[in-house]
Amino acid sequence: MIQLLLRPTKTMDLGRRSEKSSENSEDLNSVDFQLEWATAEKGGIVGVGTSSLSTLLADLEVEQQSFDYFDEIALFLHAEHMLSTTKKLPGKNASQIKKALPFALEEGLTEDIENFHIATDTIKPGSPIRCRIIKHEELDKWRRSFRDFNIPCDFISAESDLLEEEVGVCSLDFNKEEVLVSAEGTNALILREQLNGILPTLACTRIVCRGGELTEIEKSQLPNDAIIENHEVGDQPEIFKAFLTNKDSFVNLLQGEYVAPKRSNHKGSSAKTIGGLAASLVIVLIGSSLIQGFWAKTQYQELSAQNRNEYKSLFPLDSVPVTSKQLKRRLEGKLGVSSQDSPAGISFIDLFGKTVSALRPNDQLQSLNFNQDKNELSIEVLLNTYDQLDIVRSSLESKGIAVEVASAEQEVGSV
Image (cartoon, rainbow, N blue to C red; front, side):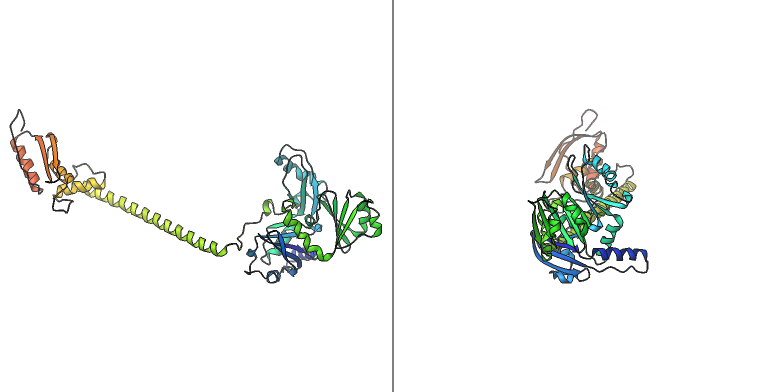
């Protein structure tokens, strides 16, 4: 997986300028600001840098000039834009807890809870819930800023999540006159002068400082056995590793109505293109076959119905043939033609059909024998009179069938 990790460096300026833009309809230009970035591949950081939104794609120097090159783009917002806290609520299932969560969080807010978007990690009954609270207006502002420069965001989280350490460890991120304090799933952005009053309340055995160091007075507020680690400002891009190694512990703000749409990436782009073309071709061929088959079936049904109607108009006293083969045999029998083009003559079906059509309904067929080699049909039938025998013979001969009477004897009431 190839990832792009972003962290704005001038969030306060962005907030003030965006708010002015929203108040002044004449100033709606996109805000171009600086951000730190890191590219990662297979769980390791492969590049870091600082760019503005407008030059980010060019500075990344990716193979294809598109953000689709990355499988995932994650944005980490400064603590001043959201509230991070942890709550533990009673409830039999996640649904009950989720419904009660807004009421529990509203106690610590100065505005109506409806103005805020709440994102959480997986809710499990009996377990603490890590919550991230941000104003709808604030989240829309950030998403709009990136969208103005065609930069997609698949994951938005709190910068403090990058600073979280294991239980018993506190992280301090120094930024001029402010300090971001993170401990056990909760963080707070305070003034540097307030740090003296906060340190004694931290139940930590190890303090990790980034971008600054504690003064001797501040160190005196810690337990004697507390371990202090200092990291230089230049090491800050390395904190992105926390996201790469433990992504499941991060809370994605893009939940509910803000879920990020799925998008394509660079992987196997050529193969996907060829595969897509092949799949499209197969679909077209299948579609053409289906359309052709449907058209042929429709034409067949229409022609069959038309033929049956024509037959009924020509022979109103006959029953209408059900199938095309029946219709074909009927017509051949009436026209005295054969469906066989071979010298052997007409087929058994033709011969039998013409013979039966020459008999009357009360004539009784006694036996039937067909010699395929001689193409000869022998029948034994009871007729009323000799005159009827002559009628049958004449009818068959008129249809091109040679008739030979082997024996005709007068019996009681029949021949």
